[in-house]
Length: 393
Image (tube, rainbow, N blue to C red):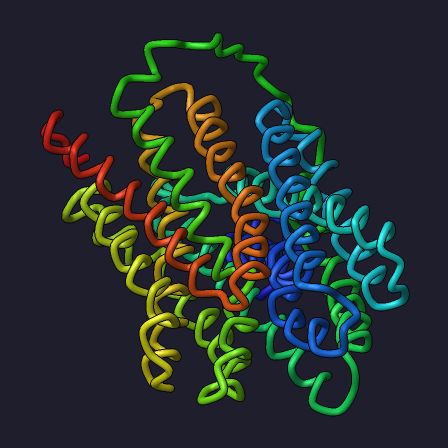
């Protein structure tokens, strides 16, 4: 049997194209900012406050894109927006490498966020539609492992260029890498002919939003807050700790590597022990990881803090989305949209209070304390809901 990498219907090619799409949308357009932030803060190109505003605006773009994606029913339209989003991710990355104009940076981060949502949310929908498996859960676990791959690979590229040049060169190199691989997902994640779309309408169903689902949405908001603090500032936080500052880069690489197998492992555990139980455990671990830089400057524990973060954040997205899909039955778009919106609001709000507290106190500790309290409240809500409703799902 001849192996053809250009076959649009090969499951292997579809997953590879999906993971390359995540490299562009998540690695280049989103997380490379976290890798390069310490260097950008160091040479005073960027103030801490402005860095928080840029991060927040990136999530405003992502949130608007994720909400917009809910209303794209037709698969052919999804393909079109996936392509537009992928191109936007590459072009907005170039902006950060060739100019330091504040307005252009602000605009480019919003558009990059929208592009990321097209690459991740719409890309995931296309991958799921195209895959030819009876049970797609394991295959989607492999696809979501691409988030960890994207994070690690964009970090390695950024760090390699930084070792001999500037952060501007890093952005330009990432743009080139994104442009080179962009053509593969654009080709594979499409269809040979126009797909007939079933115009099945799902009316808004209030019954979906039971007390438990409302608590689930609220706790996913707290998970969004927990995700974004470390996802934006972890290397910058470690850079401010004299005993371990040279490990800021390698810690972020550990985040990416730990993220690769995490969704597959968490999904298997959820299948065996229940999604809600696994969400509670993952969020509790995340709280420990958030507090770790405030309690110790032991290099091994700091590296472990990166591992905990990487091992939980990708898994939590997969766990919440999978549980939301199961609870929603025939109408997953509505519930996944509500979950994504809550998570997105957490992501937009968190960098703003983090930089305010950090500017006010002179270190990141209080921002981490507040974040740990918020994520813990999500755990408590789920524990109480579980007890009251005796659910394990």
